[in-house]
Length: 242
Image 1: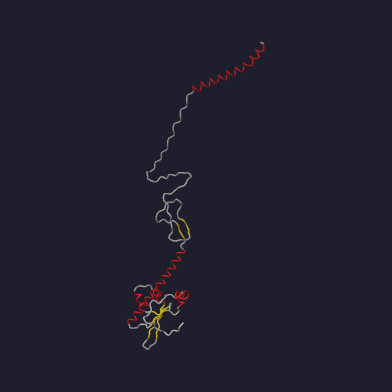
Image 2: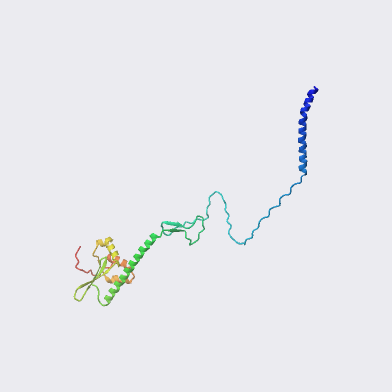
């Protein structure tokens, strides 16, 4: 019995010594940690300061997120003319003002139209000048007692028929268009010329009155060939019947 107790005592003794050693080290460490002074806190870092001139300006506020932006006002811009778009001179969201160039369209078709209209203007000016010369010539001859006994608008030209003292007929013919290319085009395409290639007798005095009133030469020609300036007495030139 005593030998058995002795064996257990030898086995428990080392375990008890180990527990005592661990407990003593813990008490020593706690006592030493409580006695150690706390380290001082690090001082705050200084804030850098930069000098700059004071000025007034807009401060943009940008908000990043998903959603839909609804404008307060919308404006639809239309061009005065239609054409092929060559370039766009603004970015989406850019502020634009009155007079700013927004886009460029192809100008070649409009330049071609301008050239065509300039040619038309030149032709009309020549027609007007011819009409003025015809009026001046008619009034000059009339002032000397020389008047045509008959006049005929052929469409392409207008003929004034005079009689000399010996009874001979003298024809003075003037171009109604001032441009033989335009005259030839009218002769080929005008249905009224196809229907009446000889033309209409006219009263030159009525034509002169229309010119003095400022009527356009083209309008005078259209009306005279339509028979709106007939003479009081229809003359006869001995032309064959069609």
